Structures are given as structure tokens and as C-alpha cells.
Amino acid sequence: WSATPACCSRASNTSSRAKPRISPSSTPPPTRSDTALGDWYVNRLVVDRRPLLLLASVSSLLPIVVPARDVRRLPDYLPGLVAARLTRLGIAPRTIALETRAMSPVTIGATLDRSVVGIMVDFAKCLPFYLDPGQWDDRMLPVVEDKLAETPCYAGRSGAHTVFPVVKAPELLRAKWE
Image (tube, rainbow, N blue to C red; front, side, top):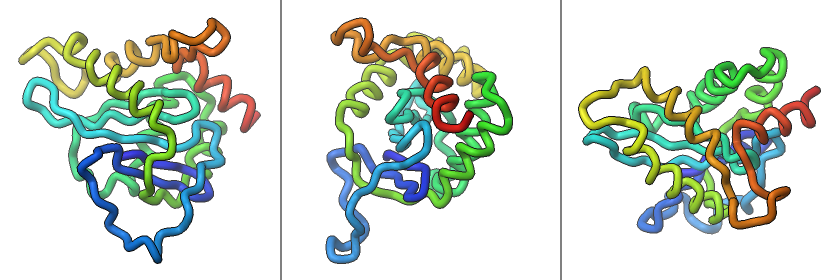
């Protein structure tokens, strides 16, 4: 899934098996979010026989890892997940409020940037190395998010184009809201 916050918040399924639930004639053209962090892509995965959701911001690649509970209501609680993640990142409450307010309403849509899906695959492959089988619980997930956020993304590009989510997210938020 990918979720897009903003004036046209959108979520889209990144699975190739997923079928659209809305007929093409009633589907609005895809739009990109106008929030600082952009669209949010979401994928369900299983680690140690426990279902998790891995979310990533398109613009910053900032990851969020949460238990896969009540997934149908994800559009309702996505802004809260983002607010909690930004709080742990040390972002100012005013900036968080502006970003999450701009996310509403959250809608479901098609994936627009397949390169982010590739980054999410890399993040998903890292998760089992950070979560010892049978030795972790939900309290470990923020620690895993922090480790993933320190991962260099697009590392094959020149140094100036390599993205470190832990650095990029605050930069984008400051540029948009401060």
C-alpha cells in the first residue's frame, strides 16, 4: 500500500497482485501530495510470524514500522502514526501539527514512484536482522525505525543524491513549514 497525505492524501497498494477497487471511469487522475514528506507508501510483511506494516515517505524515505492491526482503518490513523514518528525524531510540535493537518483527508491511490518500492524492499530485507526471532515485541519497533532511518538510500548515486531519511525528513519539514 502507499498512502499519500495532503490536499489529496492517497494510499496505494504496492503489490503487483492487487486489483483496483474503483472502476477506471470513477478513478480521479493520480495526484501527488503537497505535504513536506509527500505520499506515504505502505506494505504488509511478516517477521518472525508477526504481521507488520512498513511505511515510507516518498520524499524523505523516512520509515515507520508498526504492527499490522486494523489495516482497513489505516487512512484514519495514518496522520497519528506520522505524528508519533516525527515526535520521536525530535520535530517541533507546531511543524508536526501543520504536516499532519495537510495530510487530511487520506485516500487510497496507485503507486506513482516505483523506486520507493525498491527502497522498501531493501528496508524489509533488513528487518529480520534487527529483530531477533522470539526475542522482540512492539517496543522494539521504534528502535528498528531509527536504524532504518540511518540507512543510506540511493547509495549508487553521487554523494549529493544519496538520501539519509533521518536527515532528509527534518530538512523537508523545515523548508515547507518554518
